[in-house]
Image (spheres, helix red, strand yellow):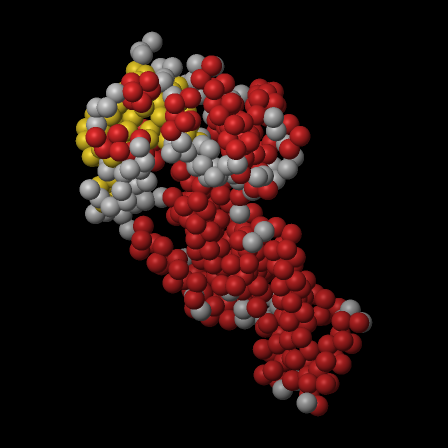
Length: 240
Length: 234
C-alpha cells in the first residue's frame, strides 16, 4: 500500500511538473503508436474490405490466418522485425534498427491483423444487410465494401481506437527493435519494464498510472464516439 | 429497339435443398407493368432477384437490351448512414451520372417524391413510408427503363400506401417498365397490365390483368384469389 500511495504521489508530481523525460516518453509513445495505427488503418481497412468481397482459392485460409494473427504475441513480431532489420538481415541496409522507425514497423505488423480482421467482419455483416441494394445500384463488389466502411464509419473509428490501444500497451516488440534507449526509443511500456528491473517500483507504478490514464482517455473517446455515432461500435467494443 | 427487355428460359434456382424456382420461362416487354402474385414462399422475391441478376441459377437469362438501365427497390430499402441528400448523390455517382448534373437531378427526384424538406435528415431516421419514397426517388433519379419492386407497400399505412402507388403510376406514365411482387391483389389490379401467378416455385398463370381476374384457367390460382389456399402443401 505504501508503494502504491507513493507511486500515486510520484505520478501526480511527474504530471504536474510536466517532467521533460516523461513528456518525451509519452509523446514518443503516442507518435509511434499513432503512426503505426495510421499505416495499419490504410492497409488494414483496404485488406479487410477486399477480403469481405473477394472470393479466390484459399480465401477461407487467409481469413483464418488473419483471425489467428489477432493473438500474435508482440515479442514474436519484435523478434521477426529484429531479424529483418539487423545488420545481417535482408533489410539491414536500411539501418533503422533501434530507431522509432523500427518500432513503427513492428507495431504496424502487430495491429494490421486487428484492423483487417475486424474490418472484414464489419463490412461482411453490413453487406448481408445492404449489399444487394448497392449492387443493384451498379456498385462493384469492392465499391460496395468501401461504401460500407463509410456507412459504418463510427464503428471503424472504434476499431481504430481498439488497434491504437493494442499498440500503445504492448512492450515486447518495441523493446526488442527499439532497444529502450533513453531519449531516443524509450516509450512508456519499456520505461516501466526498465524501472521495474531496477527496483524503482514507485516510478514504474507511476508510469503505469500515466499509461493507464492514456488508455483510459482512449476508452472515454470510444464511449463518446459510440454515443455520438451509433450502435454498431458497441458490438466491437464489447468484443475487445 | 427490341420490345423485349429481359427473358428467362427454363430458369431454376436452388438454395441448398430448397428449390425456390423451377423451370421458369418469362419475358419482360417494354412498357409493361407486371405484378408477381402468389402465396408466401411461392418464389416471387426470388423471381424478382433472378430477373435483376442477383441470384445464381440454372437455365437461361437474356438481357435483350443491355442499354436498358434496371434498378431494384427492396421491400426494406437499405439506406447508408448518411443524409437523404448524400444517399441520392451516391446513387447518381454509382449510375455514372456526370458530377455537374447530380445536384439538379437529385433535387428533381426529391421534388418528385415530396421529400425536399427532409433532404438533410439522416436517411435511416425516416419513417417507413418516407424511406420507401426515398428508395423510389433513388430509383427514378437514375432514369431506369426497368424497375423491380419487392412488395413496395408492405407494412405501410394506408396513406403511405396511396402515396407510393401514386408514384408508381407516375413511373408507368413515364414509360418505365415495372415488375413488382405484391400480396395486394387490389394494387395488382390497379397498377399492373399483366399478372404472373406463382405457386411453389412455378409460374402457373401469366395473363393480362383483366383476363387473370376473369378467366379461370388454374384451379390453384382460383383458390388463391378466393383466399382459400391452405398453408399446408396440397
